[in-house]
Amino acid sequence: MFTGLVESLGTVRDLQLRGGQARLTLEIPFAAELALGDSVAVNGCCLTVASHNETTACFDLLAQTLRVTSLGLLVTGSQVNLERAMQVGGRFGGHFVQGHVDATGTITRLEASGQDHIVAIALPPEIERLCVDKGSLAVDGISLTIAELDDGNAVFWITPHTWECTHLHAAHTGQKVNLEADMLAKHVEKLLAGRLAAQ
Image (tube, rainbow, N blue to C red; front, side, top):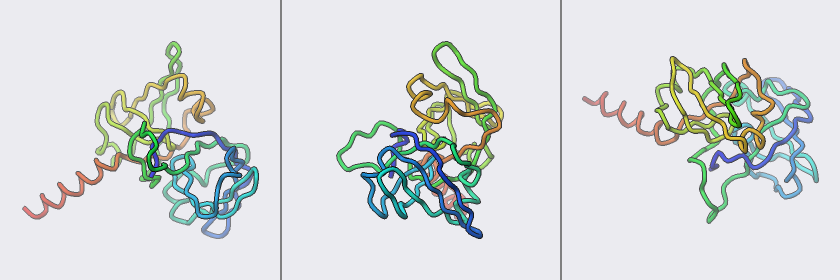
């Protein structure tokens, strides 16, 4: 379980395709503190540490992961958002994020507005229907509040801290991002669908 509060940035050292799978190697500031089997959210996707040393960690990407997320588009030098799993007893400042990417979206707008930035992301229909005005959406592992929903796009106002401490400062329009809808919204949708089907 994660909070969507990005802990630090990592840098892609290598992405090796291995048939339908891949191995991702990242330079990580906290690599020396990791243990085999630890969970790390990489651009919002929960990955398991397969190996590590003082400066890097390796993760195996399944075919499903490559199909559903944008991780297969990473190149050497790409920056990624990182968050280690929640610690029991820690403050919970974001929202419930599982690191289970539902779909990808596309950045359609990036512009400065005073000290803040505005980011708009085109949402696939299966994600849009789970979003509400002022609700939460995890975008590449960042817990963001939806400022408005506009014709298939979610618009976010990004604070200076979030802009500088995540990979958003290096983002560009047309970029694919990983999306995870609010877990509670997904459960409510399934429960209501079951009830309506029973009627």
